Amino acid sequence: MPMLAFRLATPRVLVDLRRVSGLDRIHIGEQGVELGAKVRWRDIERDTRLAVAQPLLAEAVRHIAHYQIRNRGTVGGSLAHADPAAELPAIALTCEAHIVAVGPRGEREIPAAEFFLAPLVTALEPDELIVAMRLSAWPKARRFSFKELSRRLGDFALAGAAVFFDLDERGCMRALHVGAFGVADKPVRLLETEAALNGMRPEPAAVAEAIKLGTSGLEMRSDIHADADYRRALLETLLTRAFDEAMQRSPS
Image 1 (cartoon, one colour):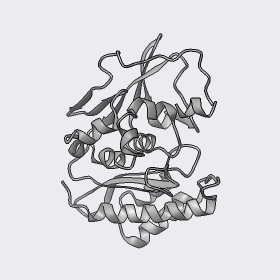
Image 2 (image 1 turned 60 degrees about the vertical axis):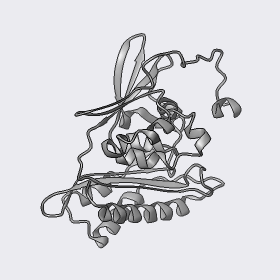
Image 3 (image 1 turned 135 degrees about the vertical axis):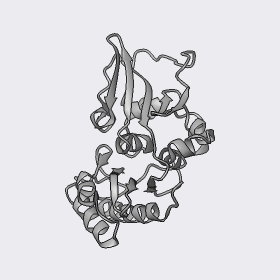
Image 4 (image 1 turned 30 degrees about the vertical axis):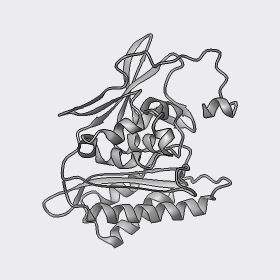
């Protein structure tokens, strides 16, 4: 609807998917979680299993817009829309999700890292439909945090950060994933930050240096809401808080 309202899309035909069965299914198994394309944000909020099976996702969903929008917005809609400031694309990228699409040539799984190409542009073909998103199993002791800042509650984020990692027996970080959104033309992974901290203890000085390393090479966007320098400083602050909160969490 926003695309139509701003005349960014003028389709000749609109297809209503309400009668397509099976797309509103939430499946939780040993291999992970599968969310159907018609799963709504409120479905995720209300499903208490997801707070354990995918707690980073569950936390991120609480930041999405307002109650009315969470009652209508869907997983497939957010992924296909690919707004660079939206929460779900950021979670999909950070968690290395796979987007399942179906078209005349059959079904294919697209890694999130290959799915988001540019603002409002994805790898989805014109004759394909998103049917699900798949997330890998979440270890119980994993540390995580999700942070974002918007000008008003429910607005798109000026910047946001998603962080998760495991701690080994020596207290060193493993499987570190760091994502950012709202700052570039699509959600991004801070690979330099991850590389610098994987295998390291989460000491504040090391974290701060790694965050600077990861954000220094990002091409930040500027708009009427915030310029690039402000977004960079904001992202660094959110990442610092995210790492601190992740460490303070008690393993489940």
